[in-house]
Image 1 (cartoon, rainbow, N blue to C red):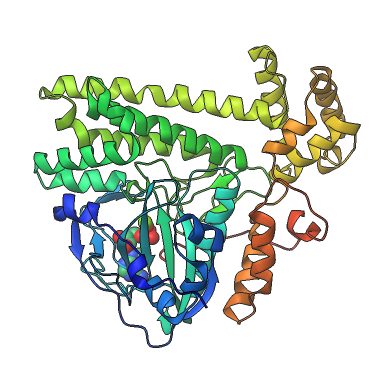
Image 2: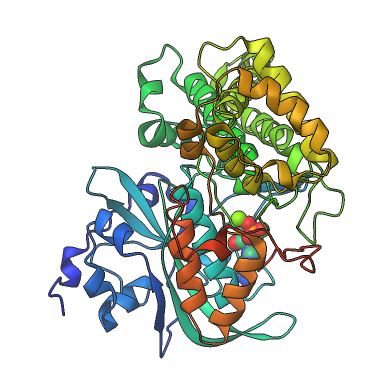
Length: 487
Ligand code: AMP
Ligand code: MG
């Protein structure tokens, strides 16, 4: 057993100190009999936390907020948000706490945040709790995204509380320990703006610059540079989602970070069959956050950030609006550039290939994939084999084989690089049917399927024997797949 004492865990509270108006000091509910379900040992080590100690009774109590290192000031954070287009002035952490900030081995400041710790002053009518299934879901999805190279919040641990959580039925409760480069959201700026306290808004922007976009501090107009940096980060983030077939499902402004990290893995899912209109969330009835709408939704959220920041952009409101509009215009360009570069990489196209040739290859392929509802992930990985040996695995995923052959002849003529393709086209993603299977087993007490799934998705680009099931598409009788929000 390790000997790391609690006093070795240094949690700072810079957010709470600098932005007291946006935080309420709070404590987690006491849990009598917590049980560690999963611990991310590499992440713990990265954070300077001893993984062995985290498994001890004391360590587990830290992970649920029942043991607070001296000097730490756990807070619930305040924020607003547009939810499915409707403004909610007072959301905030209804069931979560920012325990504090750790400075990791690389000198980076990281939030340690606990979800499912009981009701906070922002809980409104809800119970403040979280269930084992959804917290493990966030763990698997966020760690898969990290391994895929997508900026994201991370998951350090899931601890079962032994409490019952009432949803449609009674479910076992849990706390997720989440790590993020911060929890600043577009909604945080909306909240600060709504207070009418411009000094607070300015301090929030300065805090965001220092924490995420330090380059902006040296700009002629640091707050405009901050906004531009957030636009660029979100454009790049959403392009990565689109390239991987990821549907976030609840792109509200409170779930849109200033850091450009993916946050809030409630109703998200990866595409199996390619369908631009794919929607998985049970509450997204209008398809507002359908797969193809994600770039537009992100840009809409950034417009809300711009509105919140207007008083910082220029004292003259008209001038402020035109500065914001100009900065926001960069989004479609940046998004398209990131997406096109990503698609070129997925197809292994040579660097010097003419843009028109590349985009017609991409566009024509997407038509074929959509027509035949081809499995997005399986297709691109198999296509590496086509580039390498002319193997038929990719072709076999289509119904329109002649259409594919015509396309493939053009594509192979430009000399695609199969090694480069394998570096960007994953073998293993958290496939919906496997996630459901692993979570059902975990809730019944069997954590093995979850362990196997994690093993696959945390090294997604290296094909390994024994993991064939994790690479395969869903069984015929699976779906339509529905995910649930408000978990
Ligand atoms: P989400 O859709 O998960 O991003 O949550 C939206 C808002 O609802 C946030 O303010 C959450 O803190 C709050 N919330 C969600 N579930 C609960 C819950 N069980 N108890 C209290 N607040 C919750
Ligand atoms: Mg949220």
